[in-house]
Image (tube, rainbow, N blue to C red; front, side, top):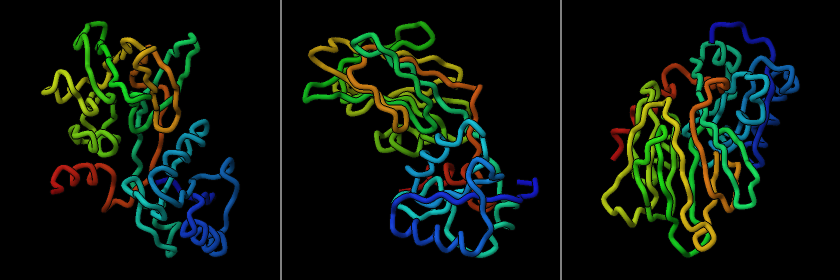
Length: 257
């Protein structure tokens, strides 16, 4: 980040370690409210980082995260020293989110942005049955599964990886379409799609086999249809130490045993 950093805001999750760090940093550095800040410092784990990004998307202020939670893939290491200089030298990463448009069984619509992924999950003991259409072409007439997801490159290391989806480089311009515990077709492992693709999930037999949709942490229950595509009108800015930037972390993840 080349611009001079003049005003910092500190936000923390409810975790005890995050709250202790919040108190220490506010004592050591001058700070302002988030709406007046040049940079927001988020203290917590990946979940809190996503919450902070979404909560401050209107201003599109850069977020510098420091690990004070359970999972810290999106966070920098924690240190109280030389924070202003560290942020000034940080590398900025712009993330383009997915937009989810979910139609519920009562006809209502839920729209939300997702930095990591949009996922569909069965709501009951019954397997979900989902039809998958990509850019207006039916690609899978019936997927019997626990669910399915579409992940961004940044999100490919999150739920997508746990569902045995591929990790893709940050600048790859692709989306990961990944089944979750697919029963039929049993050998289908998903697909890599162009980032401009529009994916539509139609829930088959939604009364007997209800499905919910989740965009990061926004949930819509009893969905019948979910449309997913990139939203280039929005961008989320994250700051990383140059030696451990997000692109390098995603690359390293492909070599983990």
